[in-house]
Image 1: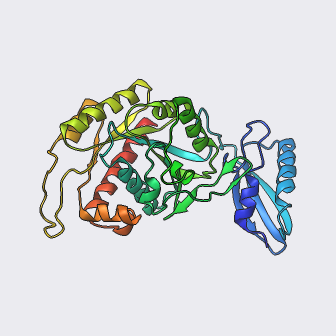
Image 2: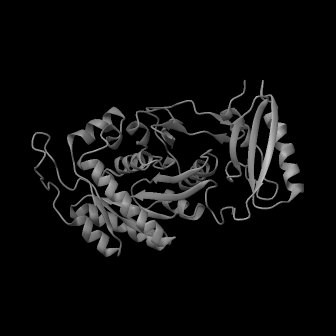
Length: 346
């Protein structure tokens, strides 16, 4: 018997005749329900244009009836006049897209991105995670997905992997683990475009994009390709990190991407045998100073713990392994402030 997932996959091949995008990406597919005779597909449309509905119904049947043992297919169109398709360069089906950047490597940007994504998933949001650090991708390892993997692909579309309820795509999934990437700028831009628009993200509340360090071609390509809700800058407290992070912030300002706030990572160290102690190994105040320079909020301070390092090595983000404690609390605070900032910019 055919499955709901198989039917949904076929529906990604059905193109809207005017918008040239598939019905799943456009958010036009509602429930897919199993019946005694087969399946009921509920589609949503903003208008009662029967000619359009008949054309879409013919396409749906063309693809879905190819599945084995699919049974009788019923298609119901519900007209929702308030339904609007995304304008501009938004990724179909994705409500909010946030870039996570830094001025330099080594500040824990990917770890912050992975745990922020996990925090959102813990709160019940549908989350996608794009590792756009093509030269040094690490998101896969942080989720326990190492090296090249066999991704599902069909009709020039790729399905992301899913781990802990998060949809994940990384360049590391496509190349051998020790294979160097030697690409020029235009090739980077094309890769980013494919990751954004050729991935079947489905419906997401949040898509987080882990940027490479610096202010290079990937960042500029993103600014041109999609309408980001904003960017979060990750830094550590010491001066050299905040100096480099300020360049990343200046780049976001230059390309008109709102800076939603600053996250200060490795703010202080908590010894495992003395959980009440706080040691500011890298100094204090750098994150707040950086946030003030951008007239943006300091979203939060994330402590250093032995558990964070161990969870990263184990491929199990700390806020998934430990849903309570100082680290989980820090990320919850970051999300609460981030949500407020996004609403202010929308």
